Amino acid sequence: MDEFLTRALVAGLGLALAAGPFGCFVVWRRMAYFGDTLAHSALLGVVFGMLTGIEPSLGIVLLAVVLAVVLSLSQGQKRLASDTVLGIVAHGALATGLVALSLLQSVRVNLMGWLLGDILAVGWTDVAVIWAGGGLALLALWRLWPTLLAMSVDEDLAAAEGHNVARARLVLMLLVALVVAGAMKVVGVLLVTALLIIPAAAARSLARTPEQMAVWAALLGMAAVISGLGGSWRFDTPSGPSVVVAAVVLFGLVQLNRR
Amino acid sequence: MTALIHLDKVSVRYGAQTALAAVSLNVEAGKIITVIGPNGAGKSTLIKVALGLLPPDSGTVSRRPGLIVGYVPQRLNIPAALPLSVRRFLAMAAAKGDWPAALGRVGAGHVLHRQMLELSGGELQRVMLARALLRQPDLLVLDEPVGGVDMTGQAEIYDLIAAVARDEGRGVLLVSHDLHVVMAATDEVVCLNRHVCCAGHPEAVSRHPEYLALFGPRVAASLAVYTHVHDHAHLADGRVEHVHGPHCDHGGGCAHG
Image (cartoon, rainbow over all chains, first blue to last red; front, side, top):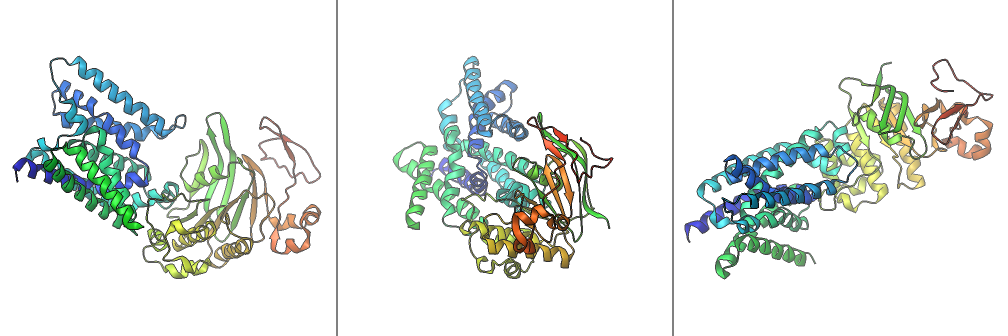
């Protein structure tokens, strides 16, 4: 097996492992549009990275973190529904990113690479960052698990029982932002939320407890990465979309199995 | 006796809208305080303030240090995608509790191994009450605790709440939108309509001729009805006009009229 395929596989597996449990919270707490918003803003993050001379990936992470904080603070306002706010931020950031990119005439950006992901281009450094970052994110999730689970049942009830809801909510948004930034490498801006929600949704009917669902989501995501990359190699199809197609097929198989 | 929780002239505004105006309330151990009032009276806001979920715009909320609260929300919107058994839901509140006994006490012993999403409305109410009691709370805060429960079940649950207060010395803050029927065991009824219209012992009013005429002596034996002496009128713009009636007990501390 070629080394770049090995790297892609190891990176993808690390990401799917982290995306599974976080995807469960995205599904439970209806954060799918939040993930999409962060993904849409990625292009602006790339431009931001170029203008300031830092790594484009770091630019994405920084912008995602800033947006997560801003969106978390905006939840206090009642005038606009949260999906409206997310829509404004998502498309505003995407459009600004595209406009800013066209103004930067001196640089050429592989737009398709960002939109659809370019996992075959990841280096060993990226792999290390994905596994280390994913591991830390999962560790933080494990520490906050009781509070986050209580919040998913009912935020007021969790707060009344002494959980620090505001802190856990912010940390979850930041961690999801990091996972989204990482997942963008694999499946690209357009499909990033798919890696979070499809394995988690498929895991739903296999699980009787929240923890089982998190484990199943990670396993199904990893299976999607393996079969997606394998299919991409075999049929010469784009890697990111192939992984998502594999995830959808797995979701379908689980639904059939249930009946 | 020191209060478990004390609200002193608490006011809450949402923009220009006043949700609570100078509401004072005291819950002591072993006492049941029932708050009644129509829709939009600020009952949910009052609960949020009492639980510390919402800071008041003015006034103070003081809780006894180390107070353990058992809260039963009006309803629970558990996401359909969250697999959660009743047993696990109870364990989230009390890791080492006697869950079967707690469920048995609220008459829901059969649901321990069911999934939360499979419960009926009445079963869910009972499970939430069991969960709150498992925390061994000093204060029980109940928001419409018999919603979705049938009539026999309502009486059972009210009896249980009364026993919890009497025998175990827990304070109870109960909220209901039902203006007419409140439990006989209530120590004090607070009639809320953004401000405290009136407050008093339900037994005193349960002998009121108007009350007996309305419900008859049979219902009166099991349920107390609080008909407050309406000494003020609610104007269309939300202001309150004092009307001096025969039972007017407006004291010097009265903020309106």
